[in-house]
Length: 125
Image (cartoon, rainbow, N blue to C red; front, side, top):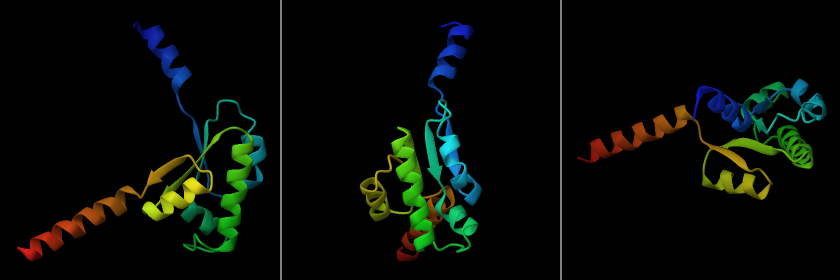
């Protein structure tokens, strides 16, 4: 395809993801969800916990309530909800909660896990 066709296809097929990690994000979510080009609202639980005054406590009731509110409103707007999950159990929990876009762990956590396995294997040798 030529450059013009490629640019059109890229614009038509670009997924736009907005992060909802702050109190302001939650307060403005209804308005954000009216933007037709927005495809996904991605929840950052750790950043959200900080914004809600319970730093690192992603299972705190305030954080969990915010996640449920974001999920409910986003799904009602017929948009996808995203979140990060640390392991398979968390992934299943989020799937059961109606979240469709799940990032598995983080780059830092995955690198650390591989490093730990490598070092454990090395020590066994």
